Image (tube, rainbow, N blue to C red):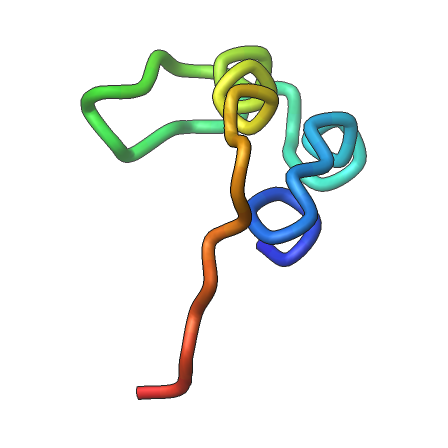
Length: 51
């Protein structure tokens, strides 16, 4: 999650997600190619804080 959503490393999808990755968000297409494309569009990192 840190590599993908905070550092926006789209290339990390290949190392971290299986080829048959199942996306559970209905607004994002299935597969890691779609996830990689999505991460590549992010301009600012997501900032998370403890609950």
